[in-house]
Amino acid sequence: MSHQLTLREIHKATHDTYHLIFDRPEDFTFEPGQAIEMKLLKDGWRDEGRPFTPVSLPGEVTLEFVIKSYPSHDGVTEQIAGLSAGDKVEINGPFGDMRDRGPGVFIAGGAGITPMIALLRKRLRDEGNLSGSTLVFSNKTEADIIWRDKLSAMPGLTVAYTVTEEKGETVPQRHLNRDYLRQFIEPGMLCYLCGPPPMMDAVQAELDALGVDPGDLVADDWT
Image: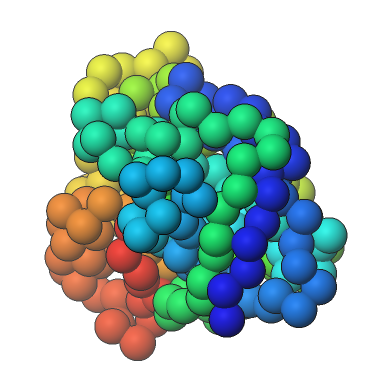
């Protein structure tokens, strides 16, 4: 079923990501971590749907997204930067296999953090804290880290930030290889993974080498 939404608010989350806030239709339900197809209801873009993951929870009155804008792609995400309150979108879905299966190691690359935000917020709501869970969040630069303050403030969550292109003032420059990941991961642990496809392929190979069973991996394409 499709729903038409009117943008209530839009704010910058980082230099190139945007926090979009809509009123959630009462009959629209989804599971935290699932994606939703969004189309911009403006000339030239009505047929261009893209998947994005809500960072809000199903029971909340708002439906919220954090979306990275890619000007070089000349596509939907480039248009996100030019949206303003009152603009309309159409959503369809939900879909996707990301689900909460319990505490574990949440591994995210770039905008792949959005399903992790939803899953962590759900666990925090349900359990009161995130003890036993670790977030490993990789970005190109320190300036790219989405919602760093909010993530770092989640009670009980252990957070490790890394960057790949240049060493940050407070973040180490490390790739998510087995030598780095082994400090967080042991066989039998539940792992969640989301990010750009090349990152996911590389990390999944490293998790295999660390003895993570495929049945203990909750993974989804970059959304």
